[in-house]
Image (cartoon, rainbow, N blue to C red; front, side, top):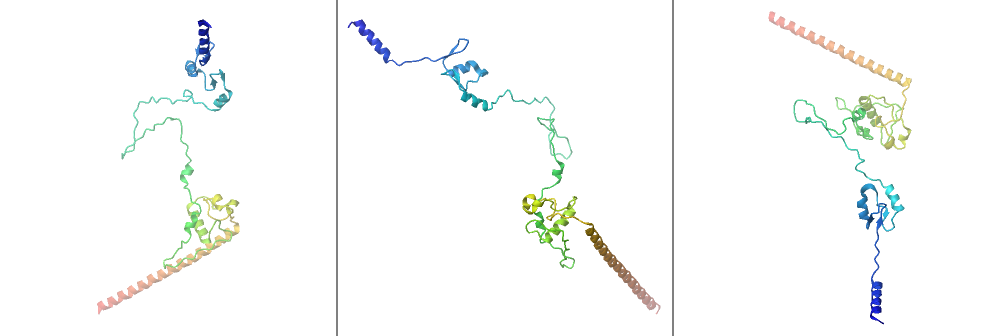
Length: 265
């Protein structure tokens, strides 16, 4: 074997023992070559989304492409920006002054108006079964004797847990004095099943009732009899006062006559 053949065999062995290196690059239609995906992304900029692009195969991955379509993208340019305030006047601040002065209101949306419900501002929220707080309250007269409470009509029946006749009477009296709405009772039939959910706090704890003409006639007769008794009591008191005044006058006259007789003697 000659020296040249040995040299060729050694070169062939060295070439076989060396690792094979493949140079991977992508070419765009303009002919420019890119050796990495970041280099291609820097060249294209924001004109194309390369998040689903596979640099080795040179194809778009459909699985990643569908996920990117479903995910909303946030674009700063698409966001509406508020207009700058070109008003150069100084705002008037609220100070602890005894004189009333206007206050400048600074807002980003001057055309918007705040919608308020005046009815909600007037009506205060009420606690469920607040009428129970009126139970156990009794009235006493000037002689510190317990005043007997009136009896409710049979048509008025309480609703709710632990609602007695005294509590219902106090609740109806409170509703008549504090509310201008008519007293109808609980109109919903479901309030008997679950009063904590279907209870109307604007009405007393009683079932729905209807006032008939017979009830009105009986009430008128009761009011007439009470007024008649009051008239008789006032008349008797006036007559007693007149009689007492006349008796005091007669006593003064007799005392005066006695004094005159003593002076003459």
